[in-house]
Length: 164
Image (tube, rainbow, N blue to C red; front, side, top):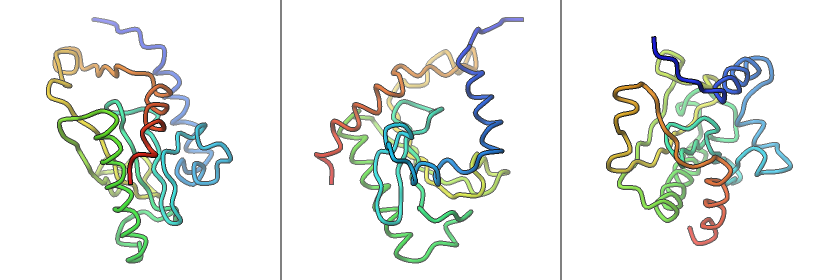
């Protein structure tokens, strides 16, 4: 058996265990006094965009309504418009900061559909590049994230003012 030493993974395991006890990451981020601590990229009157602390790819953002609801069906028209206006702003920011070749944008509603935060609907915005899936995930089932999360956050914050 091959063993891959990944000490960072224990932080994720502990984080998931705490999440079940502590509450909602999006609600906590919305209440945060220090946006950087919770990796808040944008916050409007109705929505919030935060970096995924355990991203699928560099720059992976999650956009959620401020109101804690499990599905987009539960949102009013203004909330829905604000949510997707913020998704659009995130796409523009990521395009400016990272120049990706494309994006995956998606919503997982319900645990069976892959929702990690089942009670608070959110939209994943994941930048993609030609060749960002190399031999590591295919052969070794290991994803490589080439930039530290705080470095990515600082890069996004530098570009944020130029994006409308």
